[in-house]
Amino acid sequence: MSDIVDQAVAALNEKLSGADFGGTAKFDISGEGAVMMDASGARAADEPADVTLSADADTFRSILEGDTNPTSAFMSGKLSVDGDMGLAMQLASVLA
Image (tube, rainbow, N blue to C red; front, side):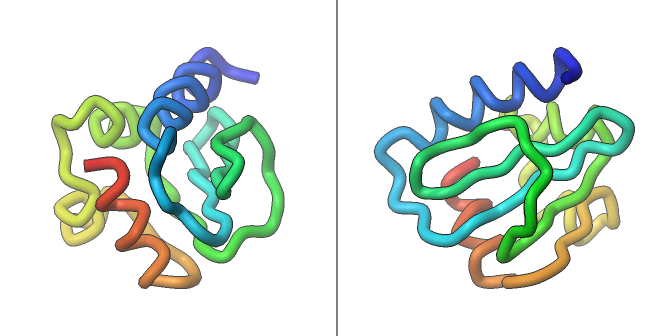
């Protein structure tokens, strides 16, 4: 597992703490691995999900650090979404 995935799991667990997030989501980080998120938190794994968000490591890090808005990243083509768009929007509000 990469350092980027480890850092992502820690950051996402902080952001998801206390959030009302239903369903399963996966962040697919190009060349690094995947992070699964659900009601129990985030973990390093690559499993089927209701929505998959794909980005390179720099874009993903920028979203987690609050420097890039997830919606802006999607609109500019830096973030792709496959699956439940409503769940993706719910996740974007948790990450903001």
